[in-house]
Amino acid sequence: MAHPLLATLSPSALAALERAKAMPMSYACQAYASPEKGGAPARLVLVVGEAHLKMHEAAVLGRELVSAFELRGVETFQVSRVVWGRLLGALINAPRALLRFVAIGTVEGSTIYEARALRYGKTVELEAAEVMPVPLHVASVYLSLFFLVSFAHLAYSIVEGILPSAGEAGALGVSLLTLLVMAFQAHMLLLVPAWLLRSRSWAWLVHPAIAIVNVRDVLMAEGTVRMLAASPGTQPAVVVMGRAHLPGYGDELTKRGFVRVDI
Image 1 (tube, rainbow, N blue to C red):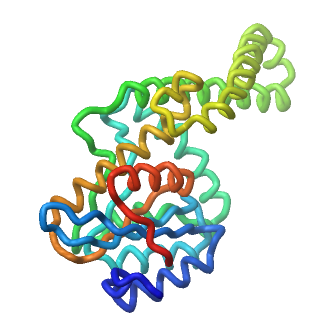
Image 2 (cartoon, rainbow, N blue to C red):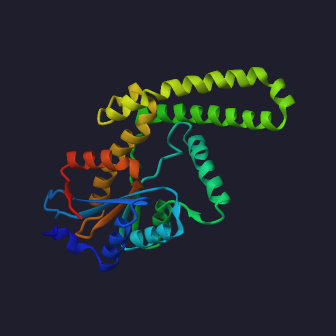
Image 3 (cartoon, helix red, strand yellow):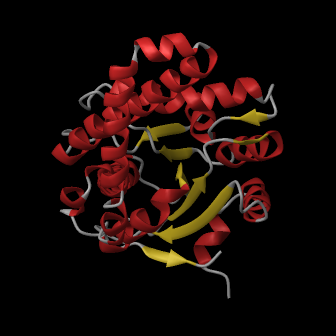
């Protein structure tokens, strides 16, 4: 039997949801019922885990899906409030932009941007907490250094392949970069136990990069609670995030009294 809260979804939202479920490479969908607290009724929260890059058809569907909701919450890394956040954002987004350029328009971007661009209803940045957790700052610095070293080593390798004399001139620099890359690669092995322990608040001590996932899972769950409280009513909400966040985010919602709804 279908959950009663599913009846609060508009026909356009239901149609888009069914189509999204048929595109597992681009979307993974879950739904939760918010707890009834202080007289506030339970509400449906549709959670959409997306691939941040997708083909045109999937991108159009994502736009239709978020457009079917008046209340929308989105994953948005707070680049201006995290140490080296702007740098990390640029390092992550540059390869995506390059891929989209090379693909000549066949690959499109995140549904998160589509939700933020809507001029009606309300779109909330779920990670906009009052204070950014320390592990997130540490993860930002670590990953920024990792990408800087990796990209620099790749650039040196390309230049050396084209101009061998330039490679010889920068041999010391290449050797140093190679050692740093090897050190990062060895340390990345600790991401495996860190991922397995991601439900623990101290998992970032095993590997700082895990905070980009588990700490933000907590921020987004807390942001979802705030979003619903700030927009009281019975209307459903949609939340969009990278699909890697779905397991941890769902666990955090459950800790806060939300109940999984079969869709």
